[in-house]
Length: 141
Image (cartoon, rainbow, N blue to C red):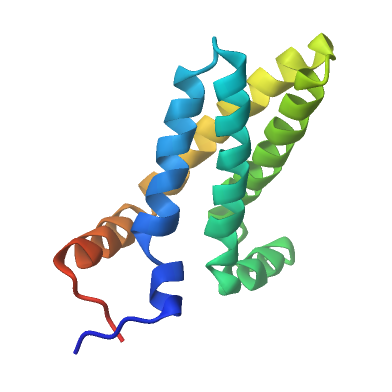
């Protein structure tokens, strides 16, 4: 049975997963052209927020990881989240004219890159399965 509703679209890999990766790569490509890099960076921050908001249980599990439940698995998520916030804030501060933020912005960008790589590696099978279901038009109920 094919069922289409908003909750399915919010969890869709095409709406949240793929744009995170694409915007991150485009952000790296546009480093030398500041206006597009700034726009892409802000879009990246927004799509990461959408990515996280589309998964309400993730916040519960991340809070539980702070108390010791499955901590090793969630370390990458916390590193990715903190590094993405630092990357976004340092990028905005750098854009405002503080060139001293360049090392902070670049270091946090590399941490985000590493965390995204590990995050995708940890969740490779469910991610591919979700993208395949969307491509075929099958949406589980």
